[in-house]
Length: 238
Image 1 (cartoon, one colour):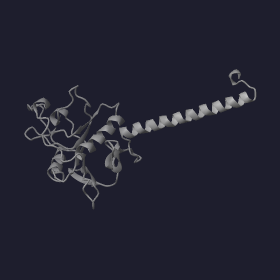
Image 2 (cartoon, rainbow, N blue to C red; image 1 turned 60 degrees about the horizontal axis):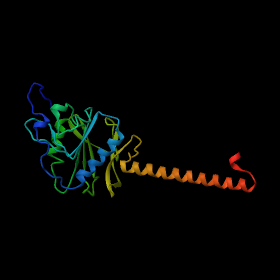
Image 3 (cartoon, helix red, strand yellow; image 1 turned 90 degrees about the vertical axis):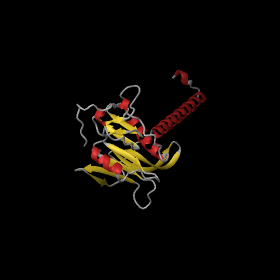
């Protein structure tokens, strides 16, 4: 893990570029981490000790440019700094290394298996997640765990991440109307955490079912009242 001398005069987030102005290679590099972030925002809506960055620069060394993963998760930090939010993630200010970093591979490789992996290892990132949707013969999702300074490939789908309290894996589903394989969070029973869209749809379905049951009950009550009246009994006097 990189260490910083608090007596050194390092630049702060406001003094550093908040972007390397490099566009993503494809839309998945934005949508996939955004989906993971959206699920966490709902799942952990009452927690304030986490931050998930999407296409945000991580400054890990005062003399090096920021490294920009597609997504990363830090635990034990403030979820919001102030109303202007974070410009970038500066390690000597945050004092917390991201616990998980995500890279989505496109046709154009950007060092996901080489230079970036080396930097994340030196930073001390515990979990390095690489999703390569272009793979056919190998699993598209690789989850590495840092063990004694070396990244070891973890097996399974989903892969349980005990330090985070969630699993991560792939599954076909729909997000923003797009049907394909996505990355999702999972609970300890390997049950997928629903997306905000799915939870809204589920609540609408429950409301529809409840209204249908209420309508059936009203219909039964009406039929019973009509039957009583046919027998000369006024149901309003019962």
